[in-house]
Image (cartoon, rainbow, N blue to C red; front, side, top):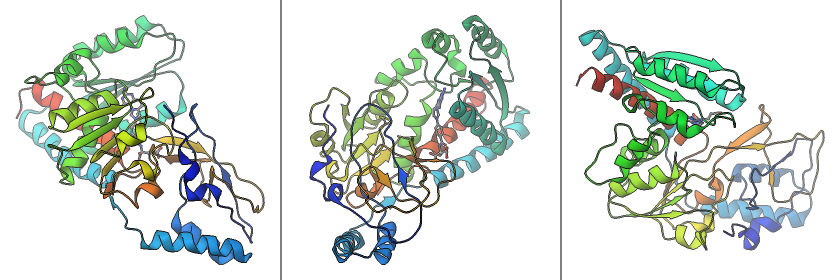
Length: 382
Ligand SMILES: Nc1nc(=O)c2c([nH]1)NC[C@@H]1CN(c3ccc(C(=O)N[C@@H](CCC(=O)O)C(=O)O)cc3)C=[N+]21
């Protein structure tokens, strides 16, 4: 699909001038598609205006700022806040269950290999378990472990009555067969909802999956908790991955939306997205969905969590171009951006999730929720 549609956007031709020391950050795009750059933060634009010297630049930035000021701003769908609410509800249920039948839900998390991002996610999941009173069991295996070793742990967890949920952190090392491993997780403990039987049930009318995959479930939960109607709406899901795009489309369909999936071979994705009342984007391309792709008033759920490298230069520079972020505080050396160009989208749509602080925290809250449901089901506790 052709995603390089930003040439007509006014921001692409913008040049800015800095008059005082600072740092500039260069963006590196992850992936193979050139998707252009989207609008900068209006507050930064304002700061720049104060520091600008040449009158020509001043005129341009002033125009941009006032445009930003008059534009309507979307409601922010606060995933972090909703996730906290859900964790509080889970905490209450976990202690009610413990008091009533003496059972504490348990989640086993397996991490194979040394990927830093995976280690961080696993640590966050463990912390989240602790915060609601769920027991967590962690297994870490080296990158070069044998598949049989992983399967042995899964089999032990399948048989362990203290474990109600099993999660194998993805991606797995290349030499392992993901299908074999995911299929080995007992369907009763598959809190990720990745088992083919779960996906099959999700797709069928009149059938109920044991678990709904956490990220798509978190997206729908956000729509529900903010009171956005799904029934009868046109929904577009961007991306068709097994773990997010496809199950998200199935869930929206179960909620009576009319669903279209846009993917890498779709022609004119922007035209299709422009029709949507609800957009769920899960492609992993920073700022791919531009403001011009979106229908005014649409609701946008941005699943992408894309690290964008930022490079600190020692002194001031004056020519700014697209693909450059103005951000003076970036301690980690990268920032996280979504699939949707947030600054453009918020002027067009009625509501949007931020990145970070949107779908990410909801994914973890749904994992805890699935683990609690699993323990309740196994122990027949309502
Ligand atoms: N078996 C399996 N199940 C998963 O659910 C799974 C997985 N493998 N592999 C990796 C992805 C990724 N994932 C995230 C969860 C939370 C955040 C999250 O909370 N993000 C924060 C930002 C965190 C930060 O600042 O780095 C946020 O969006 O606000 C992100 C990503 C679960 N995954």
